[in-house]
Length: 325
Image 1: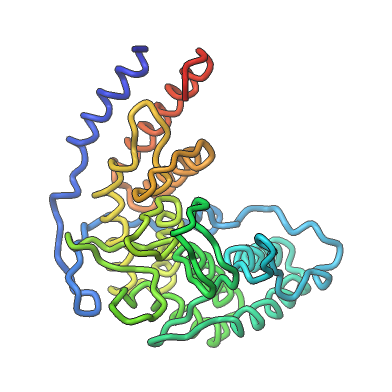
Image 2: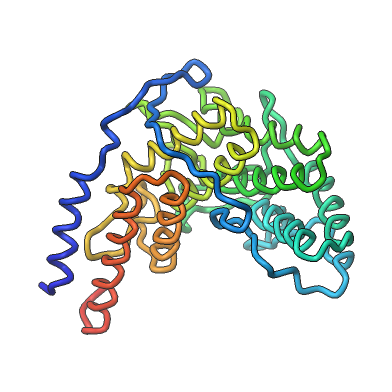
């Protein structure tokens, strides 16, 4: 076993000691359901520092924003439909382009796409959900069918960020109304009825956001972390008790379960249900953990980021030595 492998084992033990999530927990009611929340020192990052936030100086590289499709579609295995993550990312890119250049054409195109995007939404119990309108098999597994229309915590997050920024840019109340409806999708918890859902509370009182709302849940790590970043932008906007509670509850869950995604000396799991390992997503997890640390300043996430980095080094070392994956 290499020196790096010994380091990974030692770090894994140390991190279990560092994880203070079991301490300083409070139990708070969310829509009548008890959830566990740890108090974190939330930081107020500026626009340029927002986690995976489509900020910076880059702009959409088109000569005329008006030429962009009014509502982009995706063809997946012969099915043509809406992919809300792609649409919401386009809105973020247009809004950032407007912020960088002050060219009204970017904002006008964003508004046109937004109006059509909202028309695709499903409203349920006061919340707004943006559907995928094509079927999808998670990991290609036949029994894990996401049947259209289906909804995603990751898509809701990117949509939430987009409409927070619409409101910040325009000051128009209609966008604040959309913001609040999208946020409500994070507080409408799964029940026994066939309503759209992206969030639920497990038997231990931990609040989960699901990128793929199947049952039993998949617990996809990158999608959950992406969702946290949207809740963070909402908290920056609202600065109220509800937004702070939901954000901290989500971070609490990640801290409690994060060690289950880690494989010392190996790639992390994409999700806890199927335990697929993927190099690209392992690297995404590393970046997300650093950004989560910037948000809440809990040293556990900083240490886990380094642990995931060391795991990657060990994995790459083994590949270079010709050992099996």
